[in-house]
Image 1 (cartoon, rainbow, N blue to C red):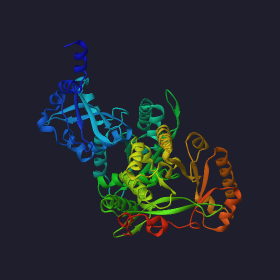
Image 2 (tube, rainbow, N blue to C red):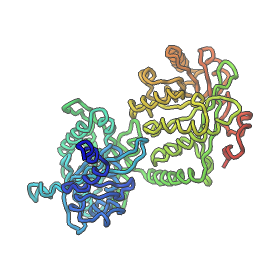
Image 3 (cartoon, rainbow, N blue to C red):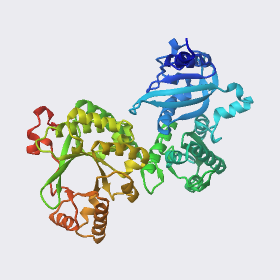
Image 4 (cartoon, one colour):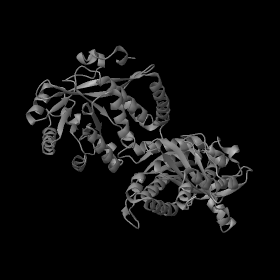
Length: 570
């Protein structure tokens, strides 16, 4: 065999697989998306004691100690790998025979070209022998390697002790759940090295902050947690103030200066919870409320939060069921030229007829769908059904479909749109995709690349809700928008506010200079329409022109649609 053919065979997939399988110094194996072991190499068998036949098909949580499993650490680590793009940490792991070893673990999510998650690649190295002393082993078993703070196990031990020795009626324990604000954006902007340095420096600060009866720990990623035993509220207020100061004062790092931020949630024992698990959960609920708030970065637990959390979990389950049962349907709202009755398009609006709760507004179920991961499947459903229905209309107006931030971050979006247009026969020129700037700023480069590809297909692109929040002129200049949708808040004040009229006039002038059409949302009165026409606005949408309606109520549009294609009213 020639040298060239030898090289070809050595570089083949089979040769690569054999190479990985025979490596004995590292445990290298694949996990399915749900954490089940899918492959196993010689190093994994050497470190952990399982043969491939014994372990493939089992969940990888068997390698964790029982307290870590009960705390949900295996699932948390996979979630961190998905969120951060990589998970790397050290900790105790368990062999088949029950013995422990100190493992350095790297978990990387693996995606197909279309963005679909294939699973995870996991590499483990036994570092037990490299630790210098038994004391260091003990310290590392109870402390976070990045920050030197107590880890989850050590923190829970201290919290349990504090709760069990509490002087009833005289003392309380406050748990503070802490999540850094914008940590992913720091990693994306400056790299993981700067992110690690940030965590390390914050760890030093927090370590120097705590005093007697106080503990601060790092649970992983950008999640910290603290507790304090106290008698008087002013002592708790002082503790929280010290934590916040440590987490929000400028840091001078090697590459840049950063002003960090954090959201804090506080829950107290015994007032807010009867056990440790509920106490931690309630502190998390308060922290999530702080994270969603624009101005309240410290929140205390309230019983209503737990009720709201249970309701959201129930709705998340119902959303997936609704997709399976066909409970979602589409409404269409007409878009017209402001100066005449010409129809310029229809916006596609998603509706949900819940079998028990009735019609649930999108403002309520869309955020829950985003949290539970259903928004991608819902977005695909809307795109497919809207394009299929519009392709059969007698008339030829454009349809406008909203894209979520998740869809805009999916590398398979362009191919998805292309395949839907091909399958339904809808011309690309009749599809308009609406995006908000909030969806864009999560990953501007990827969003720009995807929108440019969609535009090249002939699809038109609109910026939705312009002026409702963070709206950048730089984004308008850089992105290939064909239309600006002016937020309804300015239109509602158009008759009474000179400031609103001045803003509308300025945006219309900007649109004209950029050769980008402007559509006003929320037009409800003839006076508003007249002002918009006078100012040179091209298009309008709102109750004055028509309310959202089922396809069957849209006259000539519905005549060409076979009965089985008309969305049913649940």
